[in-house]
Length: 393
Image 1: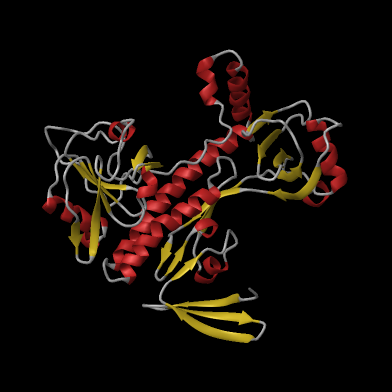
Image 2: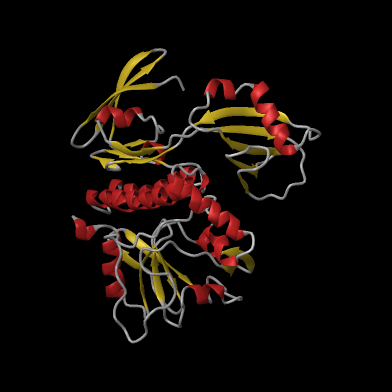
């Protein structure tokens, strides 16, 4: 919008921004600044935040091509294919008959030369065959990195998306984790702005999302090392796995073509309330700090999904009678299985070990905060206060 931030001046209770526009330069104040200005974030540079990690010495050519093909709608990887020897290639379908192709080029490739049509088109023809018609829609060359910011919150400046972390493209972790940053931050910032939670709640944004970023970086780096080995040992391991996978079932799960992104459980979050020691322990994976598993349900006589019923505030997911619980102005509404949700297939009950009377406290970002075998108002009030960060003040 022809607005450029020239300077940030963080203050104790606000941020002053100097902004350049075609009509001149002006200053404005913000109570909080969420910096989502990408991997080359000016905001990060202006406050002097560290951004450390690993740059990979490799380049990929990315080409979006329009073509009508009968390939299945799935992600394909080639390792050392005959049409691109010694390198890797990726292919997946997008909308409107657009297919995205990634060719590994190697670090010594000239980005400007490789983007020229006379270089790109022969690569694609060698891959698809000379008789497959296609049109180039977009071409670029990229280098990728795995790194993150030192702290996601610097006073009144909070970082999200690529401004906070970068991963390699394998596994679809970049945009996914940026959306998850927003899911985590938005309800916390609203609670602070509304006066329903202490400012310390925003420190848990770093606690949880930095932990998730490190998880993404670990998986992304492992995928990158498998797809583009940088040492003789890594190459030998990769080739052995691929060769064994042809005939040996045990080796197939070891083929790492980019472990697809899944939400990271916040197992050590200070907002969790651990399970109480009872005579009826829980089974399954839905422990406090875990992202909610989805399940088919019936709502008002119509088929639906559990996650579509969550995310509008704190919720008590109950498998028996329960009542709303309030801490200050924040109320956890009841969503009762058998009354508000019909679990005809039994999947919801199975995934949440929903014995009669069981109650889950679900956060606005669809994470489990706590759970009990019986409705206990005092215990739920304490867990709701914990999830709002009152114990951190």
